[in-house]
Picture 1 (cartoon, rainbow, N blue to C red):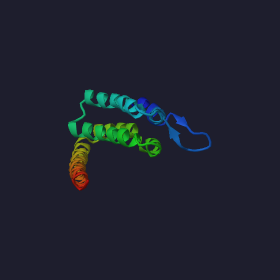
Picture 2 (tube, one colour):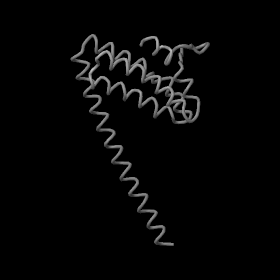
Picture 3 (tube, rainbow, N blue to C red):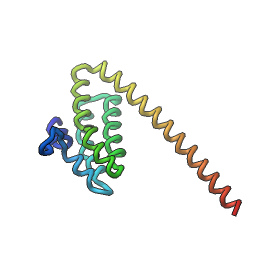
Picture 4 (cartoon, one colour):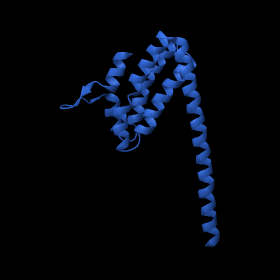
Length: 146
């Protein structure tokens, strides 16, 4: 898994710098599906973690790392820079190794992280629904005024 994470996140050093990029960042340059393809490769690490018995909170945190990478990586230009900096696969391998070394502590921290992500997701969904209602109301007002 470490080797796959290295290939995905830091296989190539940019000449003249200490910045390393991997296949994930290169795939992210492809519009329309590069970030999704990178996410599928990242899924291999999560699948292996599940096979090795990692608990649900740890797997949830790993999924969140990849989801953040895929969603934010899809934003043009900003997402490409984010892909170089985030390194979800390296984070996930470290998380898995941490769980193997200290299972109880890592599981508890992961459960809190997943809980926080779920709360943030619910808030975002609520804001999206509220924003949709406001926009729809404004459009109705425009139609009535015309």
